[in-house]
Image (cartoon, rainbow, N blue to C red; front, side, top):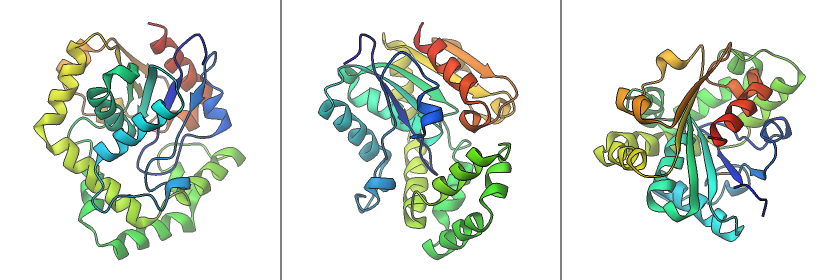
Amino acid sequence: MTSTPSVVLIHGLFGHLNDSAILQSINNTTVIAPDLLGYGANAESIPTALTLQHQADYIAQIIEEQNFGKVHLVGHSVGGAVAVLTASKHPELVASVTSIEGNFTLKDAFWSAQVAKKEVSEVEAMVADYRSNPEAWIADAGVPINDWTSAVARSWLAFQTASTVRAQAAAVVEATANTDYLESVQNLLSSTTPFHLIAGEHSRAGWDVPEWVSQQATSEQVIPNTGHLMMLESPQEFGAAVVAALSQ
């Protein structure tokens, strides 16, 4: 173990955060970015009725198995909701929570709700369309295209099956539709666990953060000239924002 808590990065609906440029942007501590259930190395390890609590419990299992002690949970998009649920059920494992444009409400999960309603065959067709032009898919999120981001786009689109995308989308809709979820956020904000918010400048306005969450959060940062995929647009600034939050 390092002298400072390790960082656990939790990815969103598509892809992963286990990329050297992303991991190395957060310096002076151990950083891991595990594959959630249904993703990457865990593609076959997915419950029949997947919930975000399954994902949260899996993150807790990893922390315990690695003997990390308390960790900083840093979740992006759907991963932000997983971080909240992990900290709520397993507070003894969590030093802080950082939500990077994480889901708080059904408004944030609007696109996931659309995906969740589709048949698997429809999601397969959607993903196949993305895979036919990965650069266009990731550029649509505001990411500049270069050799690295092109490779990341291909990697992310190959990282999970359409059935996983549909199941995870349904799971985030179920979680954020439940009033217990925002109660969990409120309980975290009322606890001694630091709770940080990070957004991209171009996407902050569309992030449905309840006003009381912004008011009670330990810190809130907006990374200039970036959007929802700020870790690809500007990895160094992304890492600096995470480090700044965790230093508080």
